[in-house]
Image (cartoon, rainbow, N blue to C red):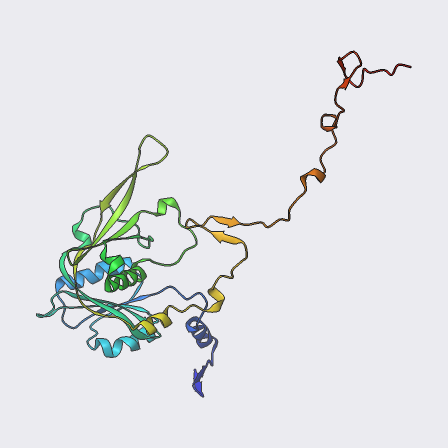
Length: 301
């Protein structure tokens, strides 16, 4: 590829396909995560990174010492917009750093310590198939009230939501990732959905823990400024839906339409001509005081 006036021009078809894949799009590619292992880690951090790798798409890089100097370089090289860094030292033992990038620069970072960890291999239950799209549940008032926890929920959603698909079959909804914020900690649990017989059409649902299980404590955060965060969420005009007149949707996605019609005169409404709808003359009063149907009246000369 040749650089001419700051513009990269491909020389081969392969490089052209590579640049087309990296070019901006209306619908971006699925987000990939870069898993990084520091030079000094514990057995808990190493096993935790291995279990998290199973849940998300990744590009694995080992022994990355200069994290904040090289992560932007590797992010651009591997086309990863998410990163997870694991380390261990005396001051911050069993440390995990979740973060995301915008334009290959750090946007948000959350440093969390592992207080309790149960590995995937230590829970002897049947696991979900690899690549199953999980259902994410966030419980706790802090996720709605606190700004830091709200951003953390957004980052965790980007990590674990998986690829965007148009539809999911009911039997494929078998994996749940549950995050609970309480008592200054964040509890992460992984469950498998079991559909049991209930004697009716709706099955009875049970949850079985499959691991991994984490008890996190939030240590340090680095949040983007409001202006940068607003720029990162800006959508192109092509994705914004065009507003249609007299059409609205409710919270469940039901479509409603409003019709505007002119005032109608029902007296002039054309109906089907039937004998039962014909106008009839009223009863005629005879001289002797009786009433007779108009059909039976005969004129007397």
